[in-house]
Length: 116
Length: 115
Image 1: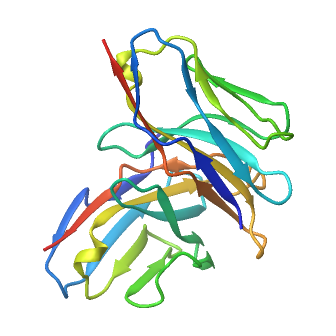
Image 2 (image 1 turned 90 degrees about the horizontal axis):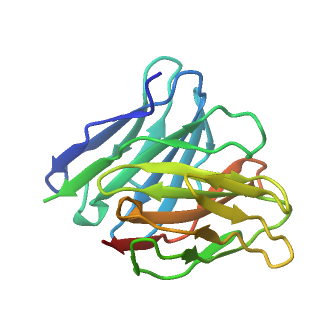
């Protein structure tokens, strides 16, 4: 049973370009979370999605960032016009969505974005 | 809002030493509590969890007890190994104001175990 998959693992973009990060949840999981991790800092929640729905995007910057989880295919985190401050590790996690928060999350290996 | 506070690292120990990493939380209601471990270059992996007061989570020699009276979930291991060197995150899951469950993570505590 494949775990959470993220690609690419490493992504280099120049300032002003777009970054697209992909996440395929575990089989049977319908809930996806995106987090950002900066060196020496913890995990910062960005957005929580179910299929075709954004449930909570309170942690996502209002500009340049967007996320989707279509009916078919992976979840996508899109960062437009990247700046150096966007350089970080971005992690996706999935959960089955039942159990009212008692269930753990399953994390992917992350995408390390470097903006030059 | 909800928050998780962990002791600052790095925690440096010799092999076979006793480990404690402190974690306290603030949350409304009754959150579920988790410890995750992150090895270099990898994502987080669940280490253990507890979903109600006085529950003890355990895995791979690690233990943590959900203490509602002290709002704590300290991680312990009786004898650490070099392979336990990693970053450990304490986390809670509780309903947000909108009703969804958004986990809150601590800043992480780095553990370094020397042979």
